[in-house]
Length: 82
Ligand SMILES: [Zn+2]
Image (cartoon, rainbow, N blue to C red; front, top):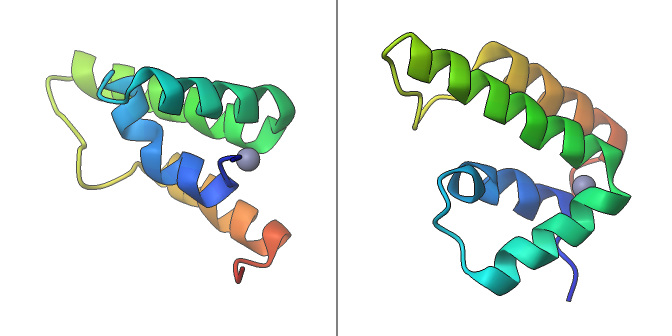
């Protein structure tokens, strides 16, 4: 069973927190290998979290503007409805 892009986006913060189990992480990694959009998304999220961590702030609830921009772009491209 493959992860879809929206599932990867939803799991990305938990992935970066190391909260996901082995198989879930593996499935996401497989998806990231094939999906450039999600790779960029996770990478951006990692960078954003790094920056906010260094700034002494966490952004657990609210994604940064860059992330929102990427998500908006992805929604346009994939047509959202499944
Ligand atoms: Zn994807």
